Amino acid sequence: MIVKMHHRNPPYYVRLTLIAGVFVLCAFILAGRFFQLQILQYHTYHVLAADAHEVQASLVPKRGTIYIRDHLHGTLYPIAKDRDAWQVYAVPREMKEPAKMATSVAAILLVSEEELTRKFSVTSSAYVLLTKDASLEAVQQLQSQHLQGIGMNKVPARMYPEQGMGGQLLGFVSLNEKNERVGRYGLEGFYQETLAGEAGSLLAEKDAAGRRLAIGALELKEAKNGSDLILTIDRAIQYQACQKIKEAVALFEAESGTVLIMDAQNGAILALCSAPDFDPANYGKIFDIGVLNNPATFSAFEPGSIFKAMTMAAGLDLGKVTPFLTYTDPGELRIENFSIFNSDKQAHGNQTMTQVLEKSLNTGAIFVQQLIGKEAFRDYVTRFGFGDQTGVDLPSEVKGNIASLTKSGKIFAATGSFGQGITATPIQMVAAYAALGNGGKLFRPFMVKEIRRPDGTHEIIQPQIVRQVISERTSRLITGMLVSVVEHGHGKRAGVPGYYVAGKTGTAQVFAPQGGYLPDLTIGSFAGYAPADNPRFAMMVKIEHPKTVKFAESSAAPVFGDLAKFLLSYFQIPPDRPIKKEVGVAPKL
Image 1: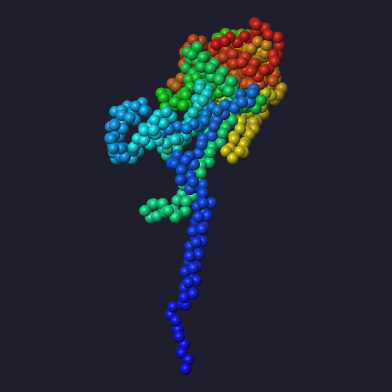
Image 2 (image 1 turned 180 degrees about the horizontal axis):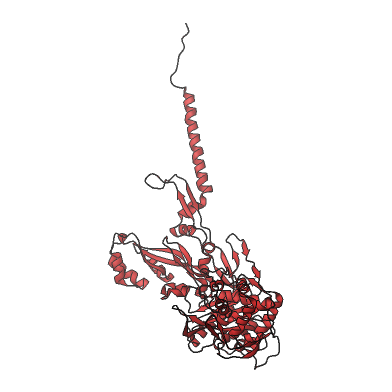
């Protein structure tokens, strides 16, 4: 009889094989984990093994730098950049002798000992910020004393190396409710996403109690730094513009002033500055929040007589007038029960269209508008860019208001012909005057020439032509007439000896909220370009509510002339003609 034996347990060698397999599997798992930690995630754990500052630095992006250029030499200068700052904080519940600690820290940070004693006495506090920007010397003293309950963090802070170069142009950087740095106003605000970059993150597997698992997955996504901006602004021109407008506001006891200088051939802004202004490094000291807005793009005003050049250009372009066409100036016109006078309240008799601009005759502007017709006039005003944003890369640009030109009454187009009853911004005016001089092309003004990304790539911003507003022939004709304004009219003080300068004065009344116009307030302006036959630049100067002078020929015109003289020399443009002292000398401010 054969008996079969059934073993309930596997043979010894089978068990040994299983145990060995388990050990091999564990070895593979450990080897894989070591490979992950030491090779694939080496950088992550290397950063985590460093101090908290390196961890924070890997998560917080560096904000891009804003540069301006010296165009003659091509040198770049940072006008807004990041720097290292030290925050000092306290953890009161870790302090053993708060009063003694307050004495030591107050002496180093140069702050109130009583205030620190009060803060340190709240032992329930886990974190109390003592200063956002301590000096390096103070930080080194605190570190050397090893004060328990006192800590320091190195954080990025924004600095503006070029003082007095236009806070309204730049804007500033502040912290939002999430403690993130955010650009406000100016270029810092408009290019926030480009400059800011992307914050990093640290992702880790956690248990049900929210604790990180020691063997769990860990992923470090490092921050992506922001891009740098290269502005179209010229360092030397910006400095001169800011200095001259500041001096003019003080000299004329004006409420404010603005100057805009643009490359007439492509729309690049070479200078933009206003007074009063603010220091972007000390924005917290601002008393009037209105100073944060840039008047060049935010403040629309009734332009007054500088607008007559647009009316005349429209008449020339349509063939309704010529520079030598004459009309009889009665000194006063009656339209729909409204009386309109020339600014000097005089009747000048027989006058050419060139003399209309030289003497800035309101009746002459109305004469041209009536020849054009209401619809065609409104069309040209729109074509010059009024009533719409220019598209300049600055925040909070307003459109101005030309809605009155759509109304049925004749009076609205009549007053609009000499810049009353409609509003425009300085940026719109300088773009329109550039179009008058460059052959009729309206360019989109722009502030940034190049964007340089952290990966080494870059983007060059190309000029953009919005439209052809007037013909090249019309551009030549209106330029000749505007040169005559500087040579023989109210614009003499905007002239530069040896050069033909084209431009027009404007002394605008200020609209009263209750209706009508304020009797004692005016806005003086001068807009023009040079050299007249091939303009290198167009410029707009606005002096708001001057007290020591009344007319623009004594306020805005000399500022224009002084800056035009500097620009023609800076660009090394040879004179158009022999210098004559009696013609168009611009006095120094």
